[in-house]
Amino acid sequence: MRRLSALLAGYDQVAAHLRGHWRHWYAIVQVHGETRNEKPYYRKPSPAEISVQVGLVLTRGATAERTIPFSLQQTAGTLCCPRHPLTLAQLPVSSFAKGRSMSSRNGFIETHIYDYILANSLRDRDELKRLRQETRAMPMGGMQISPDQGQFMGLLVELIGAKRIVEVGTFTGYSSTAMALALPADGRLIACDVSDEFTRIARRYWQEAGVADKIELRLGPAVATLDGMLAAGEAGCFDMAFIDADKENYDAYYERCLRLLRRGGLILIDNVLWGGRPANANEQDESTAAIRALNAKIRADERVTASLLSIGDGLTLARKR
Image 1 (cartoon, rainbow, N blue to C red):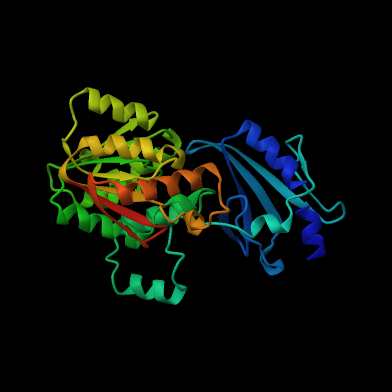
Image 2: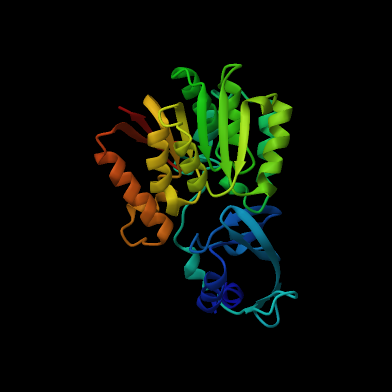
């Protein structure tokens, strides 16, 4: 543990440098050969979990801009990158003590119970299974929604008889595929994202699942895309919206999607529990504060009937009155 503390001892300097140049960054830790996506302040890893590869994925928005590999130097007690001027001398172990989960599975219930839910509920498809596997192997794979959440969202599409859906944040396409599979033959889904890299994977699986003709991808900042739809007279024309993008803009997405929905339409908002951080008043980072504010706003919003569910990393359903 002493060596680990030394290896993970200058974090603040590095974090300040990275935050000055990059909006988001993720530490990647190899754990027994399985890549796990760890955001700063995630948790304290046990000595048994630490392998010999650590890296950083630097991102702008949802696009991975650069991956920096690091190696553990036993003699110097530092994390070094051969192709980057920084030498990581810190990253204190205590910095990993706080954290959140992403929504690739429900982290609020025990594993064996979650496994039981999947075994007795999930009606899987080969395309969805392969998409999960491919995405899981990516550095940012934890951004993918869980299979039970995807199936639940498909059920909601059928329950409200949705024909037109807008999605804010597509990533590799799991949620859009799950919803499009539940749409009728004449249904349409507008997928908004900023990443051509990630949505290339989505487009491939849309084709394989036979739903590519139902989905229109619009690349660019989602606020501008949604504003363009409203300017084109599409207010009140959508049955359902799913929001799963940068948390700082959640309120802007919520307001625009609410205008796009018809009365009785449904907004789904992902990551509203954010690993439990909104419930901790000491957590005041920008993303957590934005989610906390939106959760409180929706609770008091007379324009909707809403419920916050503990599926995945928290899913809010808001029906427009």
